[in-house]
Image (cartoon, rainbow, N blue to C red; front, side):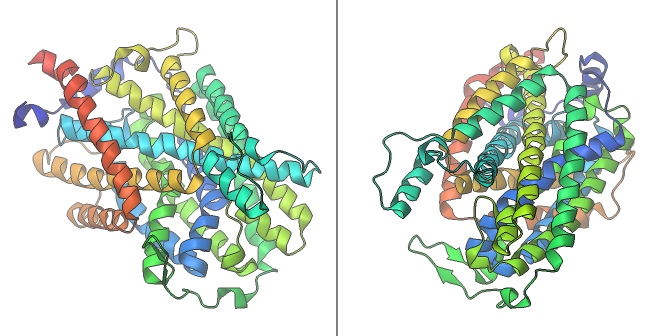
Length: 489
């Protein structure tokens, strides 16, 4: 295949045809879209990643990690917002790249978006399982077998801690089951999903504000000392703490900011996408970044970073200061709230699959089939739920988190370049939302996201390389031949 075919672009007129022929319902207003963004962002970072990032990498300087990740996200968010105004279609970075950089790069970004959304949903499902088990324990149910609530790797680690033989079989059953609950909701329809999401988001925001307000009285400034713990290197060569640890933590918690990206995948279901999508992207990011910084300072002030629980860090922090009732409330909010994160991530992934199927890069069946009654891509939703449930049942949370982050960072870096290319190639194109000083914003966004990618460990990069090689193979064996642009040629 020659270079010309690899760089062939989908005409912008074709996107407008997709909009006209779309079978998806336009039911989402700007505040529902903002709620979708907040729903994806709040939960993954506050309820899940604060434990791993503070305990193992950043210490009290976790707040700095969130600031760094927030800066990278803000730069990328402006680029997303401009694209969303120009191309109000579902598909996110994949669709934007197809119209500007070329087919191969669009496929490659779409393939990595699977890491962002599917692995992101499984990460949250594992954390949901931790909070659910904690809720049962607070209710007095403490005799659950750990081989039914942990993946094989974690179960082995738990067995070593307890001084018993590792189980021959282990599965995180709650994580698998909650994925199927979310899958059922998504199959039923976008409007129903949005209504459920709005309620859950309200509960989550109330819980986060409660954490900040109630936790301030229990902050011990001594827990912030040293603010940036001394750097250490473990047996595998991975850096912990110090400046490099803060940067690594920023790369990890970057996963928590993908909510605004999820907003852009709902363009074909937005009532007024050219106006409302940019609004929702920027608004949800500003709200969530502010809350992240405040919660991270509260959490590390209440509990010494070395003692923060990895599975349910926020609830455990309140339990450590004797506020069992507060721990119970937060656990309930997390159990409810994390569902909306999974809902948004799996919803976004199916919309990307739908666009790739329309373009011929994935098989129409099952990825492009719309349910006659519910008007949702039900077959791809069920397939995605099946795969996600298996991964959630068998994968440790830290590995899933890092894979999600590196996929997200790559997509964000590429979209910064794509919007700049389009600005130079088609300067007179109508842009309902136009970023000022775009060369500076896009250049910094690309460099910043690439920098955070290199802060992640070699094992994560190796997994990304293997995943990428699989995706490239699929492109040349199937997608390039079946692409609609190839048939036109």
